[in-house]
Length: 347
Length: 77
Length: 105
Image (tube, rainbow over all chains, first blue to last red):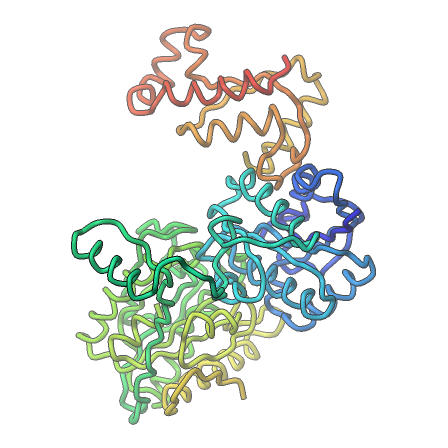
């Protein structure tokens, strides 16, 4: 009987939503929430003996302590398999699942598995360290994620041979395996080139990794006279969100004029972001977009000027492609407006 | 978004709470923030203390923008 | 289906008896309607709410399927516009499939 411990966040644990994202880790015997589906999928070979529940914000704001705390909780059960999530596109949840899986693998030396949507930040951070089953971007994909995770999880626990990412449904970890082929490499390369020239289909034997790093720009030399702009992914918008920026999966960004605005107040600004508890930002949006402080710095001569426009969008589940599109568009405006540096805030 | 702004030639500093995400994504100048629902605030302290905290973080960000870096750098001192 | 509504459905089914409750949905898309129907009949498929793992087997319909049961003028006033712009057939088919599979009453 394979003993399994399952990790989920406060939402799937039935504790609450964003307002409870700060709860500390706790253990419950047996299954909770999605664990019920995992239990059914795992069948008679395995038993989920305990479920660990932790608030997404608590975990992400206390990465080391929370990981250590949770590791202790897991150790007690001596499991032979650890399953985290699935987290789908929830960023903090994905980071938590990946962090704990890695810690469990490293210190307890047992197989671990999780499930995330390709764009979850947890994927880029942890795909090399563990098997992450590729899931849909929302919980509507639970029915597909669970069987995939339990199937691969059981294989790992039983020490069976794991096939390629495509076969088993996990996100490529960047592992290269040497194999023998019938035809010589040179022949295969020429065949591939001929197919490409003819416009026929071909598939690469090694996909080029996408590094996409940008070299840092030179620092600002004369800050006292510099024009600084504010940008945020925290979703700060004028009260009532006039342009209806979505609370998640934003399809647009906003550009707002703060000429003459010295301070963001409860009456004039709010947050549109649905991925964090909005209470504090709604009471004082400066807590996410520090206009008040930059105005003080303007007056004190620390900076030359705060640019009259700020750009905002909601980072919650917004696709990488969209975020790129927004920023490359407004970056052109920033350049044209003579902005010399940007402070970008995220939650 | 940070990379696109950098790509356009403007130095940019990322004030964010989950620093590992910023590092993975590729920001070059990073300043850690206070918490997810209030990166530049702290509702548990007085308004004056909160403003002081915010000033400290933004000042760190401004210093980061004035600092030459040759790779990803977290400014947390 | 959101957690609040899942809780209400659960409480109502306990109060009045599962065989005496019919859920009528107004979702505007087949997928959403299907998920809500599945939630009250087979259990929350996302395992996030009070109906996670709870199979009530309730009878569930979409309002589009009940056109004949409603006064024609009232239906026209409340649903006439929506009937023209939404995929009525797809929505009805989705809910019926779930009902045939999971509803016990």
